[in-house]
Amino acid sequence: MAAIEARELTKTFGSIVAVEKVSFRVEKGEVFGLLGPNGAGKTTTIRMLTGILKPDQGEALIMGYNISKEPVKARSLIGVVPEEANPYPDLSTYDNLKLVGQLYSLPKTVIDERVSYLLKLLELQEARNREAKYLSKGMKQKLLIAMALISNPDVLFLDEPTSGLDVLSARKIRNLIEELRKEGTTILLTTHNVEEAGMLCNRVAIIKQHIVAIGSPDELKIKSNASNYLTITFDKPLESDASKILEQYDHKVLGNKVLLICKDPNDIIVQLVEYAKAKDLKIVEINTSKPSLEDVFVRLVGGE
Image 1 (cartoon, rainbow, N blue to C red):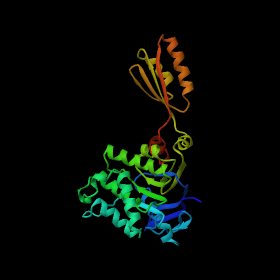
Image 2 (image 1 turned 45 degrees about the vertical axis):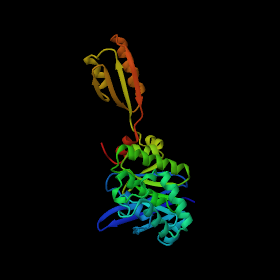
Image 3 (image 1 turned 90 degrees about the horizontal axis):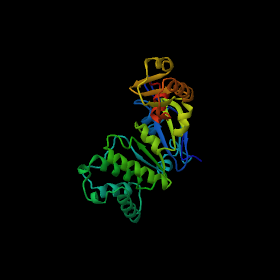
Image 4 (image 1 turned 120 degrees about the vertical axis):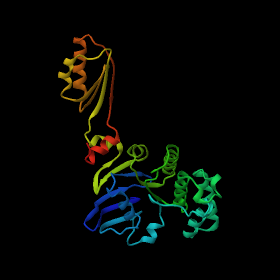
């Protein structure tokens, strides 16, 4: 049984199709990323999966429970951090957490235990008695995650969890996600940060109203059939006649360095080695690299 399952989810707003027949499964203990450009349907999909929006068609299941038909059972298993949310500004960090625990009808002993654990986990002990309106954006984000975790949910939804955070705060949130994954929490996150998704996610779905591709970051790189990057450095600048070899490739010559984009680097390497011999040039360095997940993302969503 999957922790999260989307079955043909479809949602329209008037004449605008926000999400069309989106289907995927997230296994227990998996960190699953939902990537897409602005307006691609990421947040709408999360809202349907968490029961905030009712789909026009399709089903959303949490640990086997249909969230439209069994909302109480399904929602009791999830924690949600929306993209735009704030803790109660006039309550302290501690009181925000305590209030959410009470809303879940948790016993006082359990609330005290969970609050103590989460304050330590998210490094919020020093802000325990500080009103939320005086917290930094990064600390507010950590508090929101703590509030979503107070009931010890099996499934956690994070909508753009590091959006707008400084580098240090974003890194702390990513470290927290990794810790939660190790503890067995199933996490579905949306993000504009493709590099972040590559670091955190076991699998990624790229969405543009419908699912364009799905798989691990490495699998998506293979599926996209994206080109390789090749850099060759010579001991001296190339002569003008090298253009006959290079013109068939997307390339740039920077002094004694050649940058190339090609499907198979072997052929061009052989040609340039032969050229170097004929011109009495020495190859100082050869570097090849695979496309990044960002390259794959741009390719799959129709970018240049």
